[in-house]
Length: 306
Image (cartoon, rainbow, N blue to C red; front, side):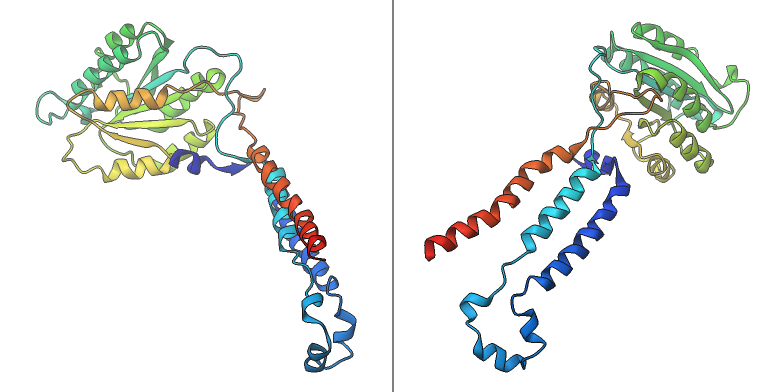
């Protein structure tokens, strides 16, 4: 539910200005709907109240009409909170692992080191996603594709075990480059990014830019650090790219949670590669029908009374 709330947006937000027009028309109509409007300008208000029949002079409420107009405006603006599922893809979308391989990952917490723990988690991940596309990108001061999405997940675990700071050409923590590299793999099929890192990066602006350029993919972060470690940097990183932060556990709970989140139906994409979102305006049609029937119900009740 929270995920849908965070994804809520309008497909045609420019049409929301019609709500202002609807309120203006309603206000003018309300003024002119008063049957005593002409008399109020000629007769003292107290005298007019004494002369009129209060049971028959009360103007009909136009509030339901305003509500109906506003609901109609929301409907045509296209509220949306979930991507449109692909009608063609049958396989699960890829899960791309972005493995940090800088020197900080050699830190023992205690033994084994953070990088060795990441290797073990990738091995668990390869078992949990057996037969489903899994890819691997290693990054430090540069980012490199180790394996493109493959259903041979054991190969990903084998290659990940060989990754170390010693084989990375440039030291550093350029997560933005890794996200940009992953975006090339996500362009055609979509998917989820899993960042395995021990701390947040200092280049938050560059990371946010790379995230937005990649069409804001779904991202999870596995904190490769002890539960007692300070994760404030990772919290800031997660917020900057709207990612889900998953604490590392001694058992397989963290991996299962990651796999369940990533195991979603492939989404439809347009010719430009962008995600197509479902138009939720149709769900408001029954409410519009109910609001349209309210005036008829009041008229029927009035006739019965007479």
